[in-house]
Image (cartoon, rainbow, N blue to C red; front, side, top):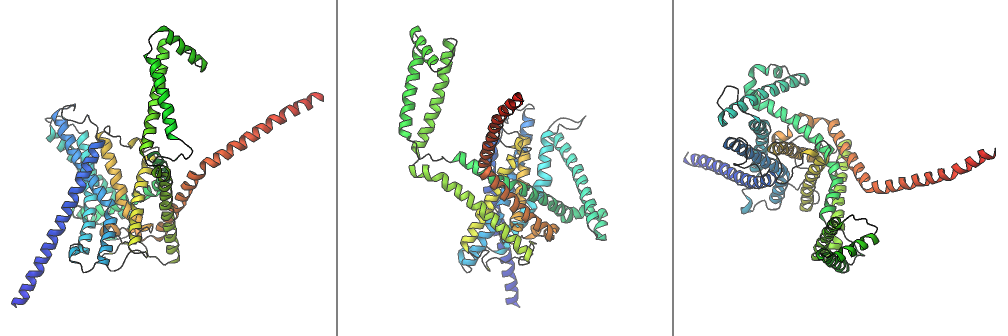
Length: 513
């Protein structure tokens, strides 16, 4: 009996210590994400948002500070959703290669399950409570007749948020009653409060995740094409037949010549400058216009000189091979995404692959997720992160959402709230999109995999087909657009020249008749 009691105590202690360890890991990870998110938001936040420059004084400063904290929390949750699959894939590979290692005993299935469940709960709280409250809080002024202050704005925001929740939950109840034949669910209106967290919020989150997947399907192919343009601006393009030292010496001589002309104050120099400008087919009215034109030339030369100095600091190997390697890497990642989606599409069509309905009990470390082992797992992580970056770039390049693009030190609080909501929706849909596209074989855990629409075969098949088709079209348009436009211009020029040649002949023939 004493041995049984000791065993029960040991098991309870083990469960308690495991739970404490998991909460400590969650807290450390959240602190890291929160600090990085706070630094990011402060970089984009408008500088005028300080205690001394608010129109309402200290009251507005407190309101915007609370909104900033809520936005920081939401952005940290978004980053956590992006890292959810990479952390899970790395954990599975580590446990697969070192199953009995003492140093990775803390890394177990319970920790990953808790991370997924915590991420789902925090995503719901941020999307349905924190972000609406932050927006209402920044726009509120207090009810009419009440004493103005932060407390009045809090009351107004809470009441408006409560009314919004009632409207949204009522709409979700109607939709679920229309599309679900379960009579018990239709009778849940009287037990609404107890079912809000267990049924209505997950159901609404499933709808929003489906919308997020659709947005990712539209934005990611556009982002793939845009990534080549963005990297072309960031990476120095090679120019093999270019002598940088000679160009730098030429610009230096031109700069010295223009500086001497600017420093010359006498009338004779001004006349000489005018003569030189006339020789260059430029018309200048007076000495002020000459001085302005010389200053503009000097600014252009200084810009070109600064660019050449940057090029000189870069090593020749990086200057000549960096851009081709980056473009080839982007092209290889995009082609791998398309091939993996096409392979997953045919596996679903034949029946080899099952639908991406999440497993309730996922045990880590049994086998590797990829046939290539650790290399395949690393490749999956790179593809997931690449898809996320491409989708963000594609979203902000769309015409309607371009105005939402954050600007460093010049983004209003309302724009920050909108960007946090967008990033949360996209990042929460990323694990679902990666699973239904076949980019990874890691099962969706918890409520992420319990969405009803994941079991629709035709819907999943259509998503794969749309993603592969639109990505191929965007890449084809990106790499063949210049050639097609040049061919069209040549054909148009040839046709116009032929028409000009035929018109005089027809005119002379009519005149002879």
